[in-house]
Amino acid sequence: MLRLLLVGIGGFLGAALRYGVTAWVHKVMDNPWFPYGTLAVNVAGCLVIGFLAGLAESRSSFTSEARLFVFVGIIGGFTTYSSFAYETYSLARAAQNFSATLNVALQLSLGLAAVWIGDALARLI
Image (tube, rainbow, N blue to C red; front, top):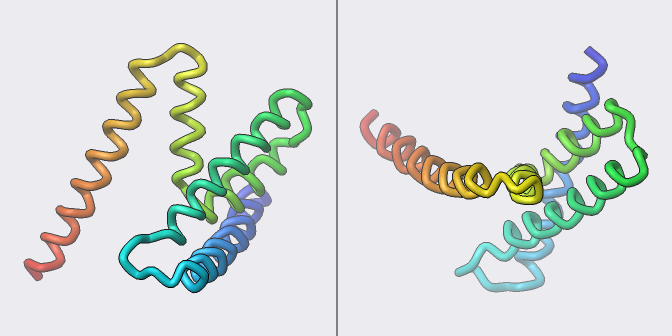
């Protein structure tokens, strides 16, 4: 139960932070034709997860509960793209190039297809 609460509280914080950062970037950029806020959040999330994962691996500085709260909760709530990028990077770093490439291809193609199918289903009902 504690793990679920850690992820839930972290997810709330990350999602609230994502909303705030995205709104701020859109306001600063004042350019409605490109999703700069989402881009900024995804890149920032990737930078943070890479940095913290490096600390966690090189210094063993995170307990399993802290990893759940920060990595899955806060950063996961901020952007799931960071998890996708880190997992792909980890596969490539482990010389599992086929798996890394397959992950990119499947995430992108199935994600876009799922959005299209979901949109099509919504228009049917």
